[in-house]
Amino acid sequence: MSVEKRFISEELARLKAEGLYTNIRTIESAQGPWVTIEGRRRLNLCSNNYLGLCSDKRICDRARAMIDAFGVGPGAVRTIAGTLSLHVDLEKKLADFKGTEAAMAVQSGFCANLSAVPPLVGKGDLIFSDELNHASIIDACKLSGASILRYPHNSPSGLREVLESRKDDPCRKLVVTDGVFSMDGDIAPLPELVEAAEAYGAMIMVDDAHGEGVLGRGGRGIVDHFGLHGRVDVEVGTLSKAFGVVGGFISGTGELIDYLRQKARPNLFSSALTVPDIAANLASVEILQGSDDLVRRLWSNGKLFKELMKKNGFNIGHSETPITPVILGEASVAKAFSARLFEEGIFAQAIAFPTVPRGTARIRVMVSAAHEVADLEMAASVFATVGREMGLVPA
Ligand SMILES: Cc1ncc(COP(=O)(O)O)c(C=O)c1O
Image 1 (tube, helix red, strand yellow):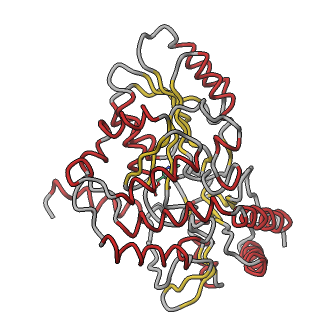
Image 2: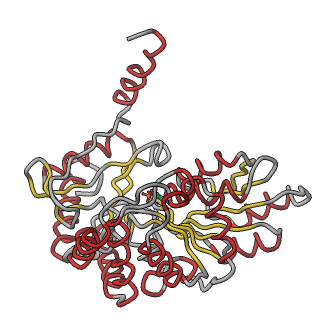
Image 3: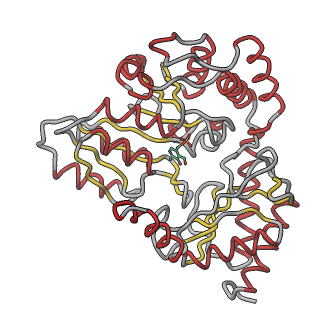
């Protein structure tokens, strides 16, 4: 390898030496509460398939039927090849679900953030961003060219302090936060953040990736959870977690969405979601609109698992949602823990720096509505066995 490219092998070696190199497992079955990996059946505790919809028969049937009617590919970007009526149907349904005037679907939640931020603020403007915001928000903010001011995590007073320090800047201002912080499961204090943004004339945007299907009436998300309809300028969502498919969307006023359709580069320069994606998402939203059974089951499973883990002496942080972080410390410890879990029948990946701060590496357990009580009892018992064996919880 040339001298110039040696940094690649050096960086890979460093990641491996520090226990930060990620090995990606190959799943040989559908995503579900149980999966097959290397020919072995394992309990799946790490997917964002909150409601178990990834392989729901109703969703798969709809995708198949729509392939027969519409084919598969979108042909090109929507502004060039037109937009299928299915895209329009999905956007109307999403807006209805979220209680907004309109919505625009894009290829992923990541793309939704890239679609939302740069059209709203640019060079000379200011973004006020929670210090623990998701990477896709951070990248969207950087891409916008605006100056980024971080405020302390989930701190409305911290946000007010930063807003106050720049109150005389005659530019556009955008406050941006995750709704649910996925590594800890805590919820943004959105009412207070909205009040701060309103007081200082800033726009506010929430990324509800882990709130949809989880918070609010029937999983309508964080804005619904806090009754803030009409007071949050931009809501970003993903279709790849609770909805069980793939894709992202932005919802808000009709004017905002009209504007983003003209300005958002993932909409202008990247092809739209495929037919099976859209059909499956349509079915998924309809399932959520029809019943809150899955959402209620998700919460009761989350509550049960947390109780069992607390009883076993684990540090499970301060999650306010079904997300259960099992905080273990160093990356190498979390990796060894994950490997032992795998041997004992559980697929639960370790998460370390840079996704979480150094020294707080963890197994982030994602409980799903599709898990049986017996699955969760088995999981808690295996965690306890491995935890005791590694001297991490009392014997
Ligand atoms: C807060 C947040 N926003 C956006 C995304 C990206 O969503 P997607 O996987 O649909 O690109 C994620 C995914 O991890 C997320 O946690």
